[in-house]
Image (tube, rainbow, N blue to C red; front, side):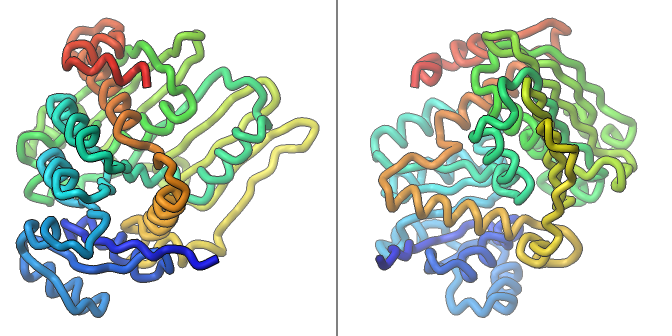
Length: 362
């Protein structure tokens, strides 16, 4: 059976570098046109990937009847506008995390999606990294038994990110740009998180760049059944790369425990009576990391755009979708409120404040 090839447009060619590689190497996608306001970036990507078309005008993607899906990799504060414009133009949307930088624009995006009937898929790339894929498979197979505790973190020396001009503008936060990976993984396994409590701190390094948003955070979360998630992040201090691989997700259940990590291609398991095992997927390193060092996320992006194509084939809603993305934003809004007040905060209160309570019923 011949699979449909979907037609893609991409806006934002800095962070979007990986999806260009993913689309070109995938048999499920045809890269129609790409866009960036910086023509030098357009020229660099055209030379790198052999592209024959590019534009500096987003309208050229929106107005192109050939393009079925628009992938958005622009600076975070622009996501809301670019998502609405794409939906209103009749395009499906892939948007890198964070979907939005707050809940303020969520109602408008939700209304646009409901009016057009188009899909919005949030590119939470960590879900599509090899160790996380195997961990999810084991979870769905019931190998962990009843999950009791989820521990996720994203620890990284990300001071390099402060060299990006937009990272120092209003709307940037370490939580929404970095820690969201750990939050998403926690919410993936405990989708009913209802309350959060935690602390945040802004380091001297952070303050040197004029940033007040905390760069070190630690949180406890619980769902309606009392199950616990522990979520942490640190971003402007030297990291122990051989100890802290970057992103980590640990599931502890009645029958077994597992830990998936990024950027190491390792998955640690203990499912008695089997002995503890470390599974290595190092042979897939060239697939996941196609550029210098271990930068960008080309392998994960190819995994998720091919998953998205399969969902379109079957008429299914790709996950995480818009509503799941909004719930994750509500968890982070509760995290922010807890840091401000020093008290536990209900996730439903954040949704209620933005007239989004209906998201919980879907």
